Image 1 (cartoon, rainbow, N blue to C red):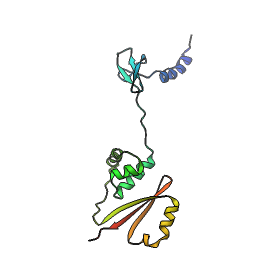
Image 2 (image 1 turned 180 degrees about the vertical axis):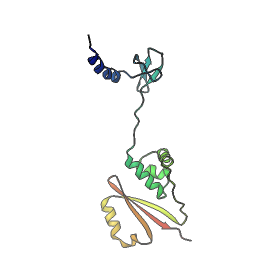
Image 3 (image 1 turned 90 degrees about the vertical axis):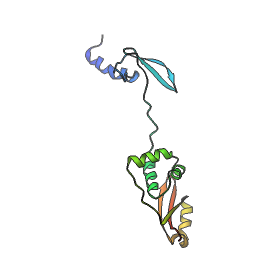
Image 4 (image 1 turned 135 degrees about the horizontal axis):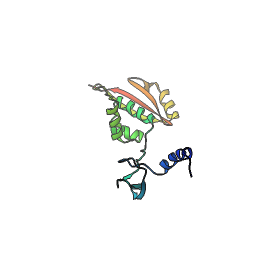
Length: 154
């Protein structure tokens, strides 16, 4: 026979093993097959079928920040997708979520290169590469991204 204290301690364990019905919050839930590699459950009380919530992939905030930086610099969604390996739809959603507005660019055109450390040092040694354009260098994982803005010729 369980006293009230040991019964109270046993409740969290029971909740962790069996999910709670999202419709009626009952604990009387049984397994009822597998759909798309996820366990399906049926509530004994109300007869509702459900699956446990998917946790989601969750993208590191580093990639969100980099994607937004690149968007502000004038790089397209698809280009950012190729660079970071994150869906262009996710990038569009982040731009909407954080209300980011890229400035109008009519006179300048951004170009970018992805370089490792040695290539970046070699590129920076040549003074001809440093003239006539604005430049930004940002870390991109174990490499560096160099963005240059060249003025359109009239």
